[in-house]
Image 1 (tube, one colour):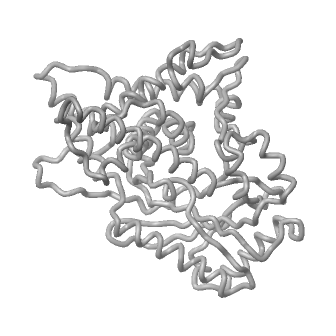
Image 2 (image 1 turned 90 degrees about the vertical axis):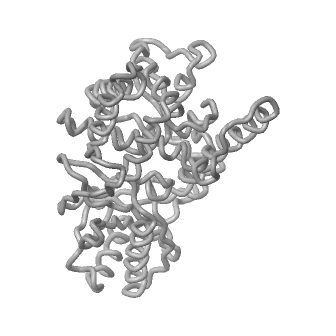
Length: 390
C-alpha cells in the first residue's frame, strides 16, 4: 500500500499546478480586473471562485491532452445597485471597459462571462473568465435564508447577469468557499484529536502540517483527474461538474475516519459513492441511521428525483442535470465502478507492476522510466470551456 501511495503522490505532482504557476494566474486576473476599473467608473472587488478558490485545481484534460488552465474570477461591482441596473447594462459596462483595454484582442464574450486568453509561459496556457456581478438584493437573500443549509452564508450572495435572456442568476461563491474550508478544518481537528488519543497507547507516524492540510484536497484532485480521463475515454460529455465532487467530499469529511494515508481516505470516499447506484427509484431514500453510510444524508433520490443542495444556496440543486438527462447518473456510476477497480481491488504481490501501470493510465500520465524523470506536460493550445453557472 505504501508503494502505491508514493506513486499516487508522484502522479499528483504531475497534474497539479506549481506555486509559481498559481502566482502567475493571480497576477494575470489582478491585472485584468485593475484594467476594467481603470477604463470604467466601476468600483470592483474581485476574487477567484471554483477550484482555484478551494485549492483543488488540477490540469484540465480534454481530447486526450492536457489543456489550457482556466481561472474563474468574480468581479463584484460595489457602486452599482442591482435594482438600478439591468443585467445587459451591467454586462455592457464590462464589455466597454475591456474594449478600451489592452485585452480587447484577447477577449471572447459569452452569456455570463468574458474570457481573456493568455499565451503559454513555462509550458502552461491560462485563460481567465471574468464574471460580472453585483450584490444580491435583500428580498432574494431573505427567500434563501429558510431553504439554505447554512443560512449564515447567504449574506455574501451575488447576482450574475445572463445576457442570453437579460436575467439575473443568484450565486454565492464566497459562501461556498467558506463552507468548504470550514469542513476541511473540522476534519483536520478530528484527525489531530484522534492522533493525540492514539499517541497515549502507540506511536504513529508524524504527518507534516502541509501534508495534513492537503489530504482531503488531494482526494478531490484524484477524483477530478480520473473523472476527466474516464469520461474522455468513454466519449461522454456528461461528466459531473467539479462542484459536485467538491461538495460530496466536503459533506463526507466529518464522517471520514482520520488517517495519515491519502489512499485510505480516497478508498473511504469511493466506498461511500458505491452506495448511490442502489438507491430506490420510486420511494423515499433511506437515511444514514438506517443504511450506515453518510452519503445517504448527502445525496437523496426521493421518488426518482436526485438532489444534493448547494450548502450556500438552497435553491441550487447540484444534481439537476441527473434528473434532466438520465444517462449522466448512469455514467457517474460507471466512473465509480472504474474507481473501485483501480483503488479498491486487491492484487497479488507479483501483480504490483501491473497495478501501478493501471494507476498511471487512470490519470493519463506516462509512467517514468526512472525516479529521476521530471514531470512533462503536453498542453493543447485550444482554449478551455468558459465558466457557466450550474
